[in-house]
Image (cartoon, rainbow, N blue to C red; front, side, top):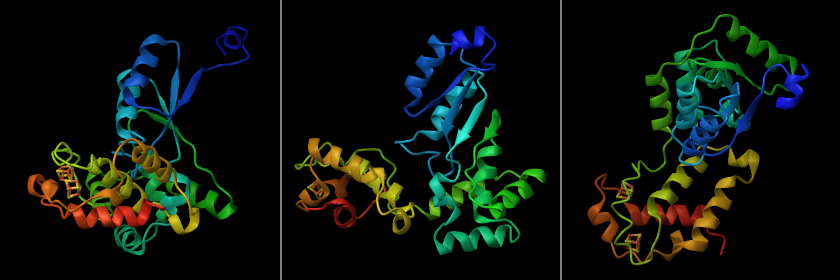
Length: 241
Ligand code: SF4
Ligand code: SF4
């Protein structure tokens, strides 16, 4: 690519990235000649421990690299949010589409130079153009409220519960995956990568269905979560056998 740039065939060299912030930091430190980074950024993946939207975005900004956003609507998930969330969005901005919230979140971040939005109809294109002309970014408070409303298990990931688990169940990581999947439009997609992530973790540690309800975890959880019952939900969702 850099060779093509020297020949004048490529104007700007950059890359898309699908890993964590530490690796991006290393890549950008070792390759300062890269001029931009393309990242998966949307308000659902912002704090995701699997996608790391916020952390990779902040890393790109730290290195002074303009960001191109991919998956701002998370494969259509954020265009078809649960009815309760849709009501909230429509109350706040009756004239704006549900998808516009996702695009405006990504486009409103300082340092974002482009948002790639897949469109499959003239209507979607007209919708995108309408709010991009009169641009109003989402506020962080609004986003936080929307995210919090959609969290199935309000686990903070402290992992106090896992050390003493006799079945070596990675409780917080399962809750994180479950929360992630509850925000997906499963009816439409049928499958998500969270199932694979769950199976991979279950191959190394205890599965959610292995919980023997000893109660150790619930005694130490600072959030006082009903972990045993929540793990049953996780098992019902992810365990196939
Ligand atoms: S109740 Fe289940 S998850 Fe909690 S410590 Fe006991 S076996 Fe582990
Ligand atoms: S102790 Fe509670 S809040 Fe902390 S990781 Fe375990 S379930 Fe989550």
